[in-house]
Length: 163
Image (cartoon, rainbow, N blue to C red; front, side, top):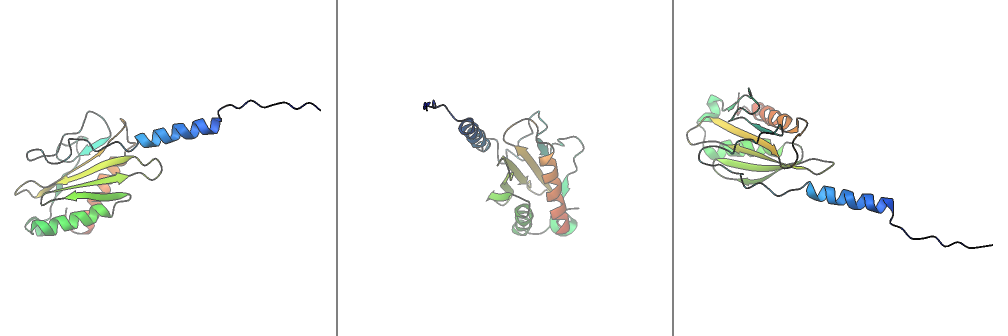
């Protein structure tokens, strides 16, 4: 009986796993420098379908988040406490920072761990909450950010905060 010696070569599974690790590591890009209020607004959306901005009507026709009369005159701390609670109730979403007129949260997808940024801003004396939800990577989000904004609207409506 003749013994043959097998040559060692890279495993296809190992290469696939390495590629997947590299891909997933890229899914958590760092937060963009444009986060946060700039003047009395949030940064506009890029010219891509992976961002929703209620203050800039992107996409066109997106309804604003108008505070109900009962909430428009409440102290800022009460409003932001309700907003923070509604944001934290969204799947995969964690509040990162909150101030007296701004909130930033990160929403992470379950499977690929993509991170999107959700921002809420209320200008001085305004009865409107401006909401912006944007993907950090890619061009299309398959409607994820629009659904997130609508889920936030529903959560705030259930609390009586917005119309």
